[in-house]
Image (tube, rainbow, N blue to C red; front, side, top):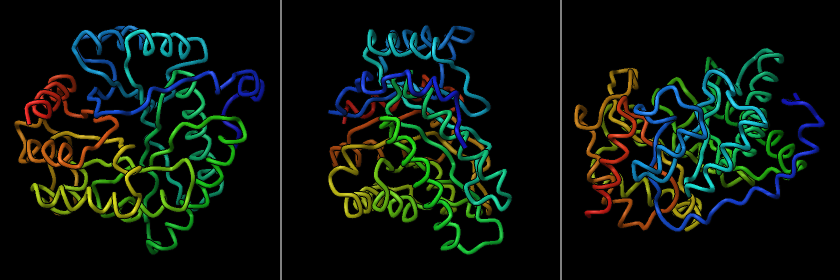
Amino acid sequence: MKSINKNEKETFDYNEIKIPKMDRLRFGTAGIPIRAHGLKTHEGISEVRKLGLEAMELEFVHSVNLNPVTARLSNDSRIKNDVVLTAHGSYYINLNAQEKNKLSASISRILHAAYIARQAGAWSLVFHAAYYLKDSPSKVYDRVYEALKTITEELRENDNNIWIRPETTGKATQFGDLKEIISLSQELDQVMPCVDFAHLHARNGGGNNSLEEFRKILSEIEKGLGREGLDNMHIHMSGINYGDKGEKNHLILKESDFKYVDLMRALKEFKAKGVVISESPNIEDDALLMQSTYKKI
């Protein structure tokens, strides 16, 4: 279940990684900006700052594409440019896997991403936690809870306090409605939600798309997690295409039915703090659109 070389973990001082206080919402891109395609990660972080954005998500969705050397370069760059980093873990995770080797592999992928992401200076790590398969939601919840308990206990043993963020998901077949994620965050230290508002919109078949519904979502987070839940938000946003079974694919905000202006208004009303990551096909354009909209409200 150990994810990277033992000596590598023991010789790295995770306490030396200093993360800025989240005193506002920071907007950024899911990965290196499109205009910086081909650049190294640490160079992409500089491009994020040149765009006027303040956050970037490391995309570990197919593989962890940093090592301790390039992670340090990324950490130096995010400090120099005052950019908050987050990370998106592997797509190949299912904490409800029936086979022990597949469950172990999923846990290892999360741990490996968490160690390298933290060495890069990342504040939090998000991933899609599980599929229900043919199991009851309560049984899947218990399995996810146990897996996350194992993960966070190991991270604490190594002084790695990166936030672990199971994400709200866009299909009813996937574990991850808002109540499940809030409950996990209540029960486990070092676990907090990643709220993907586009996923909640698609999962609900087109609901969760009005100012009142956004207020209700944020109120649920505050009720379940207190003010910390709103002061410590990792948000994903994009337009989204959906059908009877939920999410199909991400869309550019202005080419979708998502009422992003109302969402920005609700986030401002609730004085939310943390990171908003654009997962639109035009990642930097929609990140800038949301940022400018938020500032104008």
